[in-house]
Length: 323
Image (cartoon, rainbow, N blue to C red):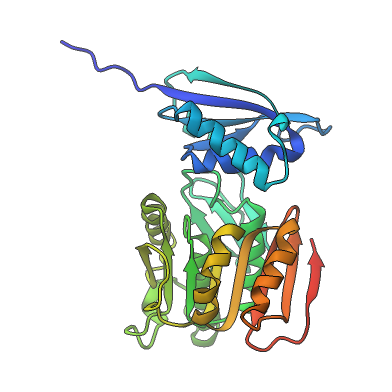
């Protein structure tokens, strides 16, 4: 009897200057890592360097790997010298993903709690819980840009139509759908979330979410099902001239993707436009680009090295909030 060979996994261990660790995480995500681990989380004393570990079922080509790392470091304002060492290691055939999951804790942002499906939460009826089955580091609610967007949605979204451009794992669209349910349930006294149950006109498109990555859309649909947010319509692709207008448009992408999309993004929102995935050093660039579309009165929030930009159809002045 022929024995089936065991699945081989690989771990890329990158020792990098602590300040540049996010750049390495971004590069590994671009390379479709299955999960990321930081080796010194929870240490009392900050270190000058740390080790970012990315798990893969197949090794990317060396040229591709170096290109992604160099580009990410450049975008974040670091040279290649920020990486002190990188090496591949074979991972023993065990449930390493289960081991990684043990270290992933809920993210709490105001009204929202983003938690893995397996994590037992204490009773908190005042919170809106978003359950996620993670498969990558970004899109789990832990990144600053996701937190910024969740905060903006909490403070500015009620029960309007919502478009999520670059939905990733679907967290922001799910957050809006659940927040809408909470607003409506407070009016009608409904206590069980059943997706479109509260929508009096189901033929009207309330939630639309898209991503150019097919795997992300698949995961987003699964997460929406977990959260019983059946109102969200997901599709693979981006927005175009035929995309309908929405009251609230959210785009948590990167600045180099957002800027070419601004003609469409600014045309598709009726009331509120939320942009994130933007480094704080890119703030002036985005402000100047928005001015080309007569968007000058905006609200900027900062979390770490990242910002979000919020524009209303009528907004009094630029405001800056640092978290």
